[in-house]
Image: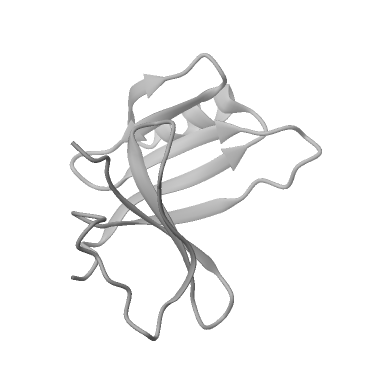
Length: 114
Protein backbone atom coordinates (compact mmCIF):
# COMPACT_ATOMS: atom_id res chain seq x y z
CA UNK A 1 0.00 0.00 0.00
CA UNK A 2 1.25 3.49 -0.83
CA UNK A 3 0.69 6.84 0.82
CA UNK A 4 -2.17 9.04 -0.43
CA UNK A 5 -0.40 12.39 -0.74
CA UNK A 6 0.14 15.19 1.71
CA UNK A 7 -2.13 15.14 4.76
CA UNK A 8 -0.71 18.16 6.56
CA UNK A 9 2.11 20.59 7.13
CA UNK A 10 3.19 20.82 10.77
CA UNK A 11 4.83 24.15 11.63
CA UNK A 12 6.41 25.22 14.88
CA UNK A 13 6.33 28.95 15.63
CA UNK A 14 7.52 31.35 18.30
CA UNK A 15 4.19 33.20 18.27
CA UNK A 16 0.99 31.20 17.80
CA UNK A 17 -1.24 34.27 17.53
CA UNK A 18 0.82 36.02 14.84
CA UNK A 19 1.29 32.81 12.86
CA UNK A 20 -2.43 32.00 12.95
CA UNK A 21 -3.31 35.54 11.79
CA UNK A 22 -0.75 35.24 8.98
CA UNK A 23 -2.37 32.08 7.62
CA UNK A 24 -5.86 33.50 8.07
CA UNK A 25 -4.79 36.53 6.01
CA UNK A 26 -3.82 34.06 3.28
CA UNK A 27 -7.30 32.52 3.26
CA UNK A 28 -6.94 29.71 5.80
CA UNK A 29 -9.74 29.16 8.27
CA UNK A 30 -9.15 28.15 11.87
CA UNK A 31 -10.66 24.69 12.44
CA UNK A 32 -9.68 24.52 16.11
CA UNK A 33 -7.21 25.84 18.63
CA UNK A 34 -5.94 24.34 21.86
CA UNK A 35 -5.29 25.79 25.28
CA UNK A 36 -1.53 25.35 24.77
CA UNK A 37 -0.92 27.73 21.84
CA UNK A 38 -1.51 25.43 18.91
CA UNK A 39 -4.22 24.80 16.38
CA UNK A 40 -5.26 23.64 12.95
CA UNK A 41 -6.10 25.73 9.90
CA UNK A 42 -7.29 24.70 6.44
CA UNK A 43 -7.79 26.36 3.07
CA UNK A 44 -10.46 24.52 1.10
CA UNK A 45 -10.15 20.75 0.99
CA UNK A 46 -6.35 20.66 0.74
CA UNK A 47 -3.87 19.60 3.41
CA UNK A 48 -4.28 21.24 6.79
CA UNK A 49 -1.66 23.38 8.53
CA UNK A 50 -1.05 22.61 12.19
CA UNK A 51 0.75 25.34 14.14
CA UNK A 52 2.41 24.75 17.51
CA UNK A 53 4.19 27.36 19.58
CA UNK A 54 7.66 26.50 20.86
CA UNK A 55 9.97 28.46 23.20
CA UNK A 56 12.21 31.20 21.74
CA UNK A 57 15.22 29.03 22.61
CA UNK A 58 14.06 26.31 20.20
CA UNK A 59 14.50 26.52 16.43
CA UNK A 60 11.06 26.15 14.79
CA UNK A 61 10.75 23.01 12.64
CA UNK A 62 8.63 22.25 9.59
CA UNK A 63 7.32 18.75 8.99
CA UNK A 64 5.35 17.46 6.01
CA UNK A 65 2.91 14.71 6.95
CA UNK A 66 1.93 12.06 4.38
CA UNK A 67 -1.46 10.33 4.55
CA UNK A 68 -1.78 6.58 5.05
CA UNK A 69 -5.33 5.13 5.01
CA UNK A 70 -4.60 2.16 7.30
CA UNK A 71 -1.52 1.72 9.48
CA UNK A 72 -2.16 -1.99 9.96
CA UNK A 73 -1.98 -2.79 6.24
CA UNK A 74 0.81 -0.36 5.32
CA UNK A 75 4.15 -2.00 4.54
CA UNK A 76 7.20 0.18 3.91
CA UNK A 77 9.21 -0.78 0.85
CA UNK A 78 12.80 -1.90 1.47
CA UNK A 79 13.96 1.46 0.02
CA UNK A 80 12.28 3.28 2.94
CA UNK A 81 14.18 3.54 6.23
CA UNK A 82 11.70 3.27 9.09
CA UNK A 83 12.87 5.35 12.07
CA UNK A 84 9.86 4.67 14.28
CA UNK A 85 6.98 2.29 13.47
CA UNK A 86 3.35 3.39 13.73
CA UNK A 87 2.48 4.52 17.25
CA UNK A 88 -0.71 5.95 18.72
CA UNK A 89 -0.60 9.69 19.37
CA UNK A 90 -2.30 11.69 22.11
CA UNK A 91 -4.28 13.56 19.44
CA UNK A 92 -6.08 10.56 17.95
CA UNK A 93 -3.96 9.33 15.05
CA UNK A 94 -1.19 6.81 14.45
CA UNK A 95 2.18 8.07 13.21
CA UNK A 96 5.29 6.54 11.71
CA UNK A 97 8.58 8.33 11.00
CA UNK A 98 10.75 7.49 7.99
CA UNK A 99 14.01 8.93 6.68
CA UNK A 100 14.63 9.82 3.03
CA UNK A 101 17.99 9.29 1.26
CA UNK A 102 19.10 12.85 2.15
CA UNK A 103 18.43 12.37 5.86
CA UNK A 104 15.14 14.28 6.12
CA UNK A 105 12.52 12.86 8.45
CA UNK A 106 8.95 12.39 7.18
CA UNK A 107 5.82 11.65 9.19
CA UNK A 108 3.24 9.19 7.92
CA UNK A 109 -0.17 9.59 9.55
CA UNK A 110 -3.05 7.13 9.68
CA UNK A 111 -6.38 7.18 11.51
CA UNK A 112 -6.43 5.72 15.01
CA UNK A 113 -7.62 2.15 15.43
CA UNK A 114 -11.39 1.93 15.70
